[in-house]
Length: 185
Image (cartoon, rainbow, N blue to C red; front, side):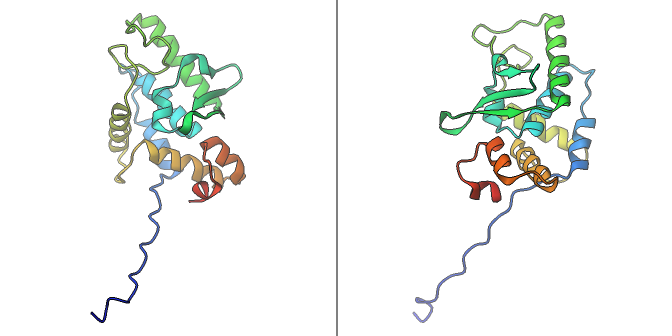
């Protein structure tokens, strides 16, 4: 076969989808905070985008690891490695509003789920799939045609920080990447 010794071309790198700052804002604006779970969704999206968390980190985020007075949280990332991540003032404000609303509603919390920050309507912590659906539905409500997931918000967070002049090493630490090469992508 004359083509047997010809090397095939290497596939190009697929860059992850990224939202513009305006698209992220449209998603925030699409949340009806007066609706049941609207406050939760707003706080959740603020933390997901504003701190660049992985969806699994958001699902397992415990209240005792969120320090609203100091505006940071501690997450357990891949390989059970803990890292400290800053939160924006808006994230802190939205979490406080969500917790106030949750406390005032008196909604029941399932046994063993008391420590989790974000709960579903039945009092259990959110699953990765549920967060995926919430993000997808918000993007649709905001008129965003891109195919996005919670991870898209993480990529957008990093891209917007980089565009704003943030140090790549600082972004690497906030994202919890082992290698700077992963952050560069």
